Image (cartoon, rainbow, N blue to C red; front, side, top):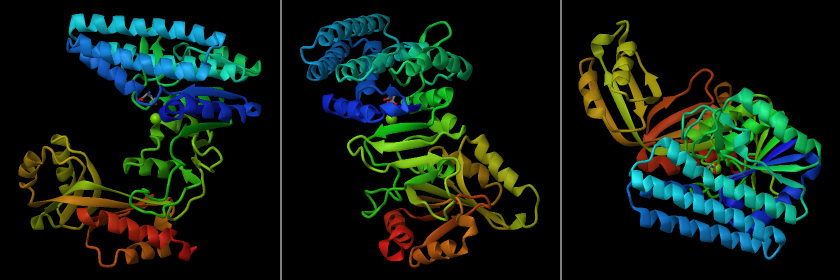
Length: 452
Ligand code: ASP
Ligand code: MG
């Protein structure tokens, strides 16, 4: 049994849905259960409809509904043509869009929308896409069976970021999904959406379809989860920065999480944690390049010294130096209490006997922080810095890799450096305009052909 999830771009139009059908067809012997996102961009459009309605801009909201209706009908026509299924799906879609329009009207009368109303609206995207995909799969000869995901993904009532109830989901998977698979069917359901025990529609938060796929995989104890998207997988560096960046065929979960914090947008590892924790591997594949190797994410992939180079700019560096704090106890505690009191979260830290340097992601609210910190010593704030991260589970054990990393930075001014004992990450703070050169050099040091 495997879970195959298609993201918004992988079901974005008729051609994409055809590719998805071929992908599933090639995997029938592995007993796939399919989870789909809304058509790419549909969730944004739906949320915009909700916002317009809540502001009382009914005309704009209804225009949004019509645009979305046309888009879905056009793809439906391309996919189903004049088959008997087409009329059925079109009628159903029509009813769904009428319902959406009524909801928009109701909200615009109220002039107000709650998170619960936004979920009611956002959920239309996955309801529509899963119906359409299931119908097309059937037409293509796949034994597809549509399931209303909300009957399986039971959540709490934290609307817009609802917490899944794993026991209830396990029950739903056992009672509704498993029998279909055992019967040789391919269940097709929307990701992202769920409902409370009382039957109110919820969503798991933006990008939540990966989470749905992972929850389903965990509930079914699937052999693997495949996330089909529009990139080949995770890469050794951002390809916009490094031309020769390479696919990472296997990566550890903690390394993937680290990369996500540096903006690797492929997926958010937290969303796949439920499956990976059970030892279920998660693969990322490109639906436009279905024969690619993809990236396999597991808890226990081999520990490499360096798996990828990442970085981000717009970092602020705050330094506190307090000569009279030499040997004083509680200095660090006081420093961090001040950060906490000011609601500022700290990323990278380096200390010496009398000073501490920290990086801050979000430079807002620093003024009052600086006033407070000044009571401890001299404070300096350096804006426009960048963090470069050399990510690898075994980096701290490999002295040659450390040497190579530092050597690669020859000539680049380093403001701060940090490595924790169990660290999977050597972080270096450089000037903002040195971010890309530093990434390129480090990437070259670890991944260029000449070194292999
Ligand atoms: N359609 C939802 C979103 O755009 C969920 C997903 O695609 O994962 O956030
Ligand atoms: Mg996504």
